[in-house]
Amino acid sequence: MIVECGVYRDGHRDGSVPLERVHEVYREKGVFAWIGLYEPTEDEFDAIRREFSLHPLAVEDAIESHQRPKLELFDDMVFLVLKTAQYVDPIEVVKIGEILVFLGEGFVITVRHGEGSALDEVRSRLEDDPDLLRHGPGAVLHAVVDHVVDDYGPAIQGLENDVVEVEEQVFTPGRPNPAERIYRLKREVLQFLRATIPLIAPVERLARGHYGQVHPEVQPYFRDVTDHLVRARDQLESLNDLLTSALDANLTQVSVRQNEDMRKISAWVAMAAIPTLIAGIYGMNFEHMPELSWTFGYPMALLLMAAICGTLFWRFKRAGWL
Image (cartoon, rainbow, N blue to C red; front, side, top):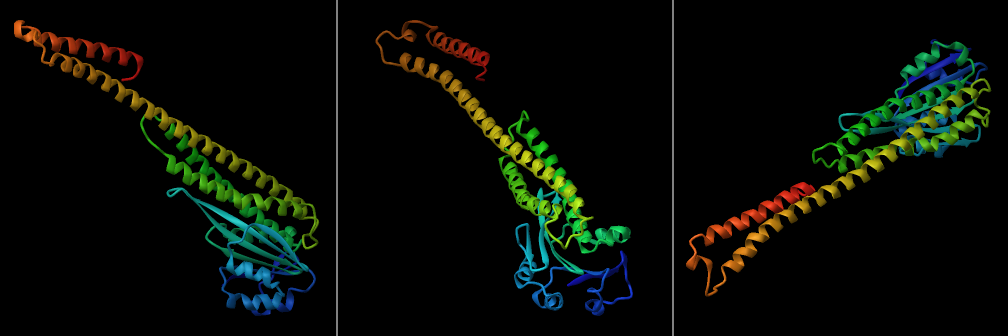
């Protein structure tokens, strides 16, 4: 469905042009149209496709979504796929959405899928900067890409906070086992990486001026976006490495605890074996058993067991087995 449609003339929005007349004016010099759609169906998108002569393959991608970040050129139209990111802290999930941008002579069409990175703020900010809007649809493309990449920052910050919590949990004195949480966070980080890494090369090409649809005055702005993307990638790769180290450390901690448990079990078994041994030998049916002629035979045997077990307990405690 169409959520926003604006015609811009010489850097200012022309509110006198209704939606049904956009096709009459967007080809004029110094004029371009910006149409925003949200999760359109094939039927809803059909009129847009016919009016702006959009390539069928790009239209198919825009309707079905779930595309990887990419930049493609169809005749004189640039097609860019962006991945949005929104971190939901209570459930520790990065919600990945999509924004697909069609950029042509005199028009820019944005198609949103998912909840992240709404473009109302972008439109308002651009309309407050007529000098930038005079550079045409390329200025809109930069503003959209910059907005999406800026939204990566809070999502990465949310992941960093949870990674710090996981590290503290791994080395806590208790017996937690955050392996499942580590694995889930690692999966979110990898998903986030898949949304950012493929976008670096396309934005670099936009910054180098490979596409005539982007005004030369706008191209340098894409270099700043590239820097932000590279920084986001490096942060996510660092988080992935930290989670890998945390998972290894957690497995090591589990192994250490198991070894400690086995040592304790072995110590108690050793202490239980001594009375069993003495009682087994003492209880054999010899002709001259201590209790037959000695009143303190049983107390002496019990005292001997207690003394040996006490000595073992002291030694095991001193060695750290108990």
